[in-house]
Image (tube, rainbow, N blue to C red; front, side, top):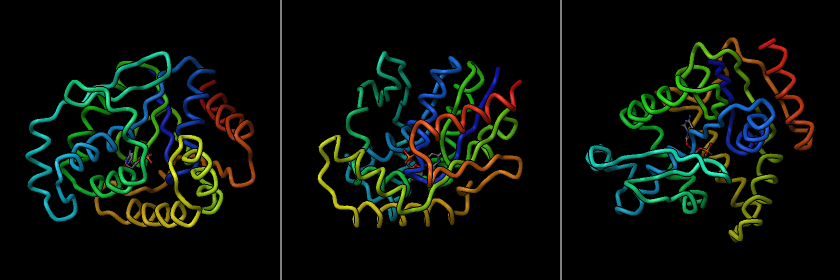
Length: 222
Ligand code: DC
């Protein structure tokens, strides 16, 4: 099995780039952020205050099943038997996902699921701690980044396309909140692995970013 770990801050373009690279190499794309988002979505729906009611989050997990379904249009998240893929990209869920990702038992719960999928296929897995903690022996590790302003601009365009009404300032503020929290949490923070290759896409467009990541994968795996 070939495992590619693609980590980096929110809005660096990981999911789009990983999806396209996976097509090119005929690998499975695994979006681990969607797994955190799904759990956050359930916590919000159950009116759990993620920051102050960790006990409730823990109890919730004991009653939760989360599956990944591969469909023609990509990865779908099946939470307790329901397809919730269309509900997990809002700014509210983004923030809650970053909040829930701080909780050690949430990370442990997902770790097993993440390793389980990666062991079964050639994959590109994107997240924050794939190279450092989920797949420390990944064949290729890439840390994808861009300036916060470039990332906020791209995220804004993505959200606008989906009809979500937010301003640039809101997106930039949310991005900085998540950068700070994802990088400073005690367990598995967002951090470049010592053996990862840095890919900075601030000055690159999407095509160039995909080409850069594919070049790295080719060089390391051939
Ligand atoms: O990649 P994303 O924006 O969909 O991720 C949502 C949140 O989930 C992110 O702010 C931090 C958390 N996350 C994480 O802690 N570890 C991962 N491997 C993936 C996501």
